[in-house]
Image 1 (cartoon, one colour):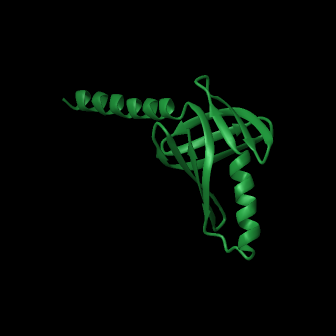
Image 2: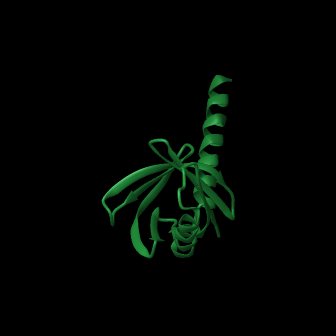
Image 3: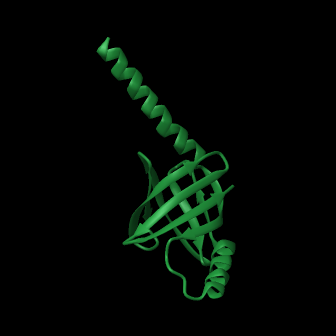
Length: 126
């Protein structure tokens, strides 16, 4: 009985992971950015965020590669989902980083980036 429960649990966990891997595939555009950082010049920040939103997109492919445009600069590499995190191996910048996946549906991806005490919440849509 314990073996059956173990295998059922394992199959469930693998299917959840596969589900996330399927949902993330496709072309995503940045829709909004929220931060807990103190902003001195709110108008300047708003203009910068508007430009960031207009110039940021990412495409996740089934072969685990990705291509992205951020501030108009392109990057590429590989991605994987581990538990509730998206791990990006950015070959173009020789950088690997992990972000928390707050929400992932067929048409919405919300990730949370944390650097020291600064938290940014990025919402992408298909």
